[in-house]
Image (cartoon, rainbow, N blue to C red; front, side, top):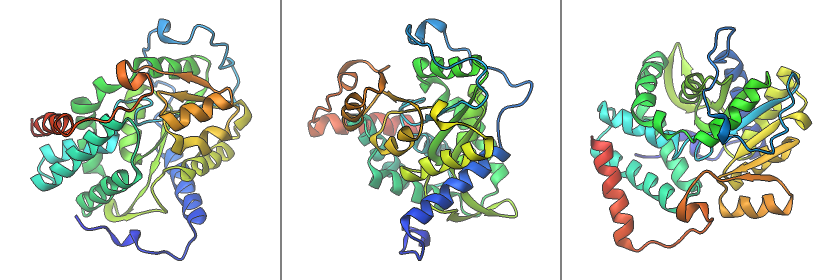
Length: 311
């Protein structure tokens, strides 16, 4: 699927686009906050929380926690799982399915985000949803969460989020996934809300364009900064959690950064700065070694994913 017009050179600088994306995400997150007086809390098991946890501080209303989504809270990438659900509902053709499957295969084999793959997935998603109503995609997103995402939540990360909730703090997802998808996941997990990529809509219909740019890298930091200002949070008392070196700008904003299931670059960066690390994976990826796979192994994963997508 061809790239959309918003990928062509723009008049705004990259920094300005990041600020715009961050501010739009913060505004959307506050409007669609999943929390209310009757919101259910997470049900993470207490034994999965770190034993030495003396943070968060209970009753600190100027503190909050910010969690990256893909491979931090959930195994895999939300945009790929969303694509699987849309394919099942015949939103796009089989050739697009192959693209989604290959991108997910790369994510699973390498254990890290590939910006080119992630951008390609977002291009496809924007083209696919163009002309559809926001309410329609929200309804479908609820179904897709049950089908493909609910059983992919990392229990250990969920327990960390629970600790913040139990301390009376707000907990936000921060992700490059569409804000509608992220909001559904946050609500299902009992979190406060979500900061995500904001797709433009007019009269409740997607235009196929973004507000700013995808909420990735520096844009995530701008979103957290904007939300903290709006919510009167003290970032030095806040926590952030991520698996990716791309989120170092966000992690560096807060007083309590955590590397969760970290990629190699983030693990090295975090260790050099004495950041806390948590790894809930097992086997090869938990050891932090990305082993080159022979072609047949990659093909096997692709075939497995393909069959799963078609099912």
